[in-house]
Length: 96
Image (cartoon, rainbow, N blue to C red; front, side):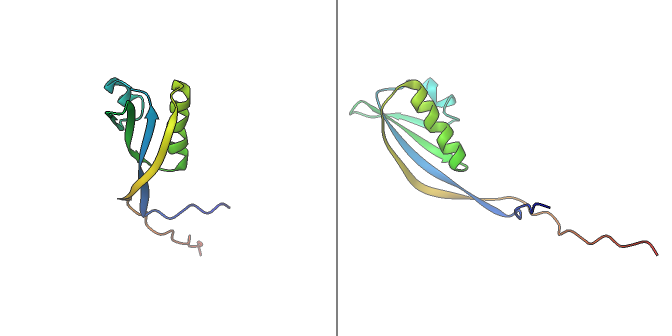
């Protein structure tokens, strides 16, 4: 039997992803609602949370699919989210 991880606080991290080139603000929706900032040097910075490494890799695949150069990826903080814990399992009582 496989053990399930206990429910409780979970962490997601905030990331800053810097791209070479300019993206229009409409692309923010495609990047799961991350904020999109165009900088004076001609790059674009995506900022926002990724719930886990798989989500971060998904965002990076989208960058690859656009064909823009990936200049930098930086973790800029973590966010603690509370998930309600489930009641503990009670042993089943045998019938007399």
